[in-house]
Amino acid sequence: MKDILQHINSVDGVIGSALFSRKGEVLVHAFPALIDAASLKKAASLTLECSHGLQITQTVDLLDFRYSDGRILVKSFQGAMLFLLCAHSINLQVLSITLNLAVKKLEAKLPGETPAAPQQSAVEDSGPGDGLLRMNISHLANKQASASFDSLGMIAVSQPTFQYISDFFKTPFKKLTLKNAAAGTSGTFPVMVMKDMDQQYDGTVVVGPGIEKKLKVSEGDKVEVKIG
Image (tube, rainbow, N blue to C red; front, side, top):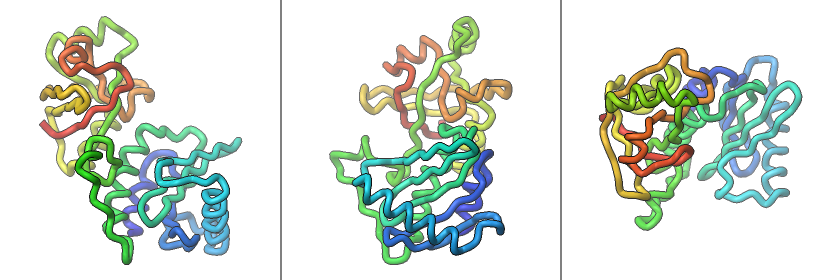
C-alpha cells in the first residue's frame, strides 16, 4: 500500500500521506522522516475524534482543513481514511483524479475489508469505487478559441489532465468517449492537449458549444470518461 501513497505524493503540492483505520491506527504512511510515528499516531487519533465529533459519515467525501501555511485533507472511504498534508496551493481538481484511483486500489488491499458492490439503482451516482472516471465539463474563457477547436469536432484537456487520464487507464490516448448518463447522450472525440492551459482547467474536459449541445451538458456537469 505504501507504493500507492507514494504515487499520491507525486502530485505537485502533496507533502506526505498516510492511511488511518477507523479505530485511529496508522496502517501505513509515506511522510518525510522529520514527521515521526508518534506525531502520526496523534494525528490519526485527532482525525478520528474530529470525524466523530462532527458526526461525519460516509456521505462526506473530503474534509479540507486550511491553515496559513498549508492544508490537511482527509478522504474517507470504506474501512479507512486517507490523510494528506499539502501545500496551501494544492490543486484539488487534479489531486482528486489521483485520489479516486488510489482509493479503489487501497480498498482492495485493506486486510479483512471487502468493498461493498454498488446497488444497481445507484450505479450512476456511486463513488470512485465503481471504477469509473468522472470529470467536470468546462469552457474556455476565450469563446473564439473554444469555437475554433469545436469546429474541428475536438475537445481539449490540459497537459496534467492528459497525464492523469493516461495513468488512470494505463495507456496514452488520442480520443475520449464522454457520456452524460443523466441525459443518455455520449460521443467520441479527438483530443487536443493544450500545454499552456491555465491551472483552473486541470482535472476538467474543455468542450465547445457544439459538443456541449450534442452531449446536453453545461459547465460544471460531470461526465463519464473513457478512452475512445
